[in-house]
Image (cartoon, rainbow over all chains, first blue to last red; front, side, top):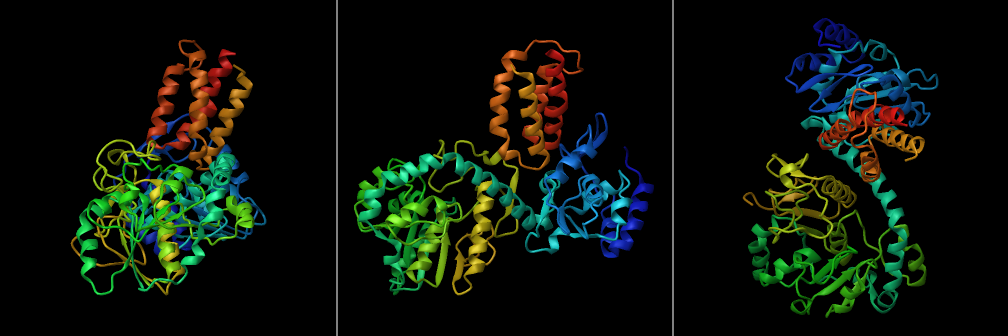
Amino acid sequence: MEISQELFYKNCLKLESANPQLATDVKSHFQTKFDFRIVRGLANTISVSGKQLSSRHNPKREAEVQASFITESKEIYLYGVGLGYLSENLLTRAQLSKLNIKILNLSLFSLVLSLRDQGTWISDERVYISLASSDLDLQTPYFAFHPDVLLADDRSQNIKNLLYINNCDHFSKKQFKRNESSLLKRVQENHAYIERDKGVEHLRNISSTQEAIVVGAGPSLELNIPKIQSYRFEKQQPIIISVGTASKLLVENGIVPDYVVIVDKDISISHPLVADFSKMMEASLLYSPLVQPDLIKAWYGDRYVAYSASPLFDKVKEIFPKGSLFSGGSVIHTAIDLARNLGCKSITLFGADFAYTGTQTHAGHESGTLTNYENITPANQANRWVKDGNGNDIPTHDSFISYLIELERYIERHPDIKFWNSSKTGAFIRGCNLIVDHA
Amino acid sequence: MNTKLVIEQLTDFATLLRLGRPLEVIDDLINLLTEIVPQTIGQKSATSYSVEEIFSLILSCQQAEDWLGLADYLEYELSDFLIDLS
């Protein structure tokens, strides 16, 4: 296996019949400099940026294994192409009438076309080949080549992130099942509080203002504290909803939130980013039945409980019927949905970064390991990126990407609410306008 | 060590890696390797790699997120080494 210009043009000739525009684009990306090498085993493959594109020993067998997990369907989507073996395998299915190939990186595709004859599948009339970057959402049923996803180009970041979170979702659901008994035990321990406290339905449309500030714990919060302070001088002050881990920084700066939202089972009252409850006596707590009983007990002000759509709460909902809020993996979703539930039509986000700033993951936290962040890749070793408000790549990790996409989907589902972002230094959030230019 | 069982597990891990589901593999793989290492370090096999080399290559693959490379090491080099030992 070696780079062959002849092979490239031979493959391109076939591509011209399938998708002439794509063939032109591919030619313009031919011989883009790539960090790649041939890897020899019982067969050969290439490794691009340290990642093999197929098995080096038996790529045909690998394609068989992959195909065996792809549903028998008339139409299938492939994100990425690998070295082309899976396309060839799937096209042996007589019932397959359409195989959609979504290219995630034009330069990578161009490299693949110069290394192996792809003519068999490209010229099959059931194949429809196009750029993944022209799609807004994933199509199903699909199979994604993981190396292609990791090597997706800038234009395909949206689809790349969607593929990531689907992958993470699959894993989370398995993990959730593993932890289910301990979580149910926690809910049981909180029964007395759930019974006694009001549900979130008591907060429906009670807001006297339509404006809400929702404060997450992302690093950009530090820069924007003065903006939150400045709202005090407005005639109609917005409601301030803070996630638990942003509360200490707010309180230290003289801002007592109206609501504090805590949903994480591992957050304790001694968490370094959670304010001393005695300094937030006027604030109300909105909690999930999964939080620590000691934390609920220690709260001074009003308390409200909210379920989520998780099946984990199915039984307790029957015993103590109360309202639910949206959960997309992060407390920020629940805090935002609380603002909607209160009747707010304009929601401004602070500290909703979904990325690192420098080495920081949380505002007000410089060093040491935070609960649940023990295994998170440090910023200087991160290998996931999102665009910030200025269009620059900023380091992040899979969970943050997943939270970001869930938030973007939530925003899309609520066109009646205006969403604003206070910072350009965190991740760009689709559907969210920026309120300033400098931060 | 039950070589047959270990190889079955390595093949299952390799399959998940080939499907692009590394999150489901890594913790269990580390546990399995932690179990295998003390029983194999220093042992000679007729295969071309030493077990130390294989473990080191596995680690490199994991760091580079080279999941198909890792799948190959589990399903071929490491499995062949263990079969040869047994």
